[in-house]
Length: 436
Image (cartoon, rainbow, N blue to C red; front, side, top):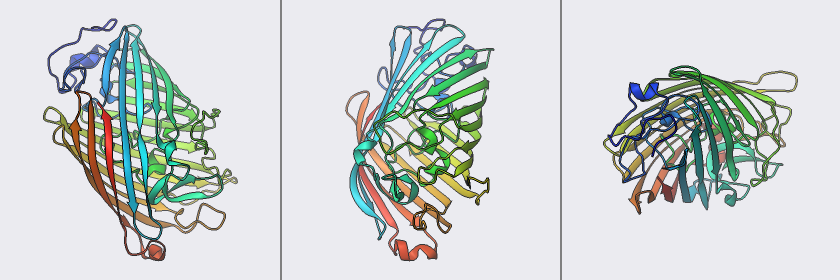
């Protein structure tokens, strides 16, 4: 089956895009699961420009072109349809007096449809849903995590908040303006503005872990934004884009669609110098992000590097290194201290059965011991390291179930010893159903 104004599918295996693929506006894609899941080549459009579709991550973010397919693809007339699902059933045990344990469900189900209307014009639509609201408003125990609120009155501390049912409902249009150049516009309700690397549940370097990073509110907490419009320019491996979006975090009704408001700005520059490397730097000024401190704005900076390389026919190695800074700005324009976050994460998948993942983080935070009636308190530098593995069993060519676990160690200064106690080890055991 062919697409309009595009070459026919090729049966020749191709681990990476060739220069010819880059110049005809379509992509040679590895990992296609339309047959037996082995890497094969297929011509299909990327949503935002004339390059490999595998470059596209969550929202308008980029990942390395060498990234494998994570999902199932089909043709429906002139449309290319992609489906992906990852659903986790997790038992979480966080140690110490501020920990806890519980069972919860997490993950996402996503669908995307892309149509190359002509040799120059492409439209795409994306929908992504999450089972997270089933956790209840308080989410799940996660030591050293902080951000948002459980009930509109008290901040969440040492817990990860649930995401909304609707994580993304978006559409985009791109126009090719040269051999390797394009312009695009993206809109979502909700959607993801042009800030940071792709969100953690889409990063190949850690997507197999069901544990959210404690750096979430530095890098990718804007990935569910109720109202975002992004415009960008792409020239070969370089992308410059800017967003206007709603700064306020989603409210406590996890099932609704909130009214958009375009009061915040983000700008991002991305560069993929090789097929295995994706770099980005971004800035955002966010209006009143937190419900409990509506008088405070935030400025955020982010820079990251993502590396991905194939291993054999169905494996890969992926790693991400990132830095972020957020600064509170009060109603009078006074700036608080810059709070930094650092992240290194990596996944090794030697074959279709085994996956090993690890993450190390460090953050400056003032939200772990908030003052009464506030979300801020004394500042501490804390860290966390985790390592885990998952064993997958393939049920069909496109569906597999996995059994996994992880262990994590929280790293806190002496000033937090009375609060967190002596046992800083926690863990998760999980079962995963994955499409793709």
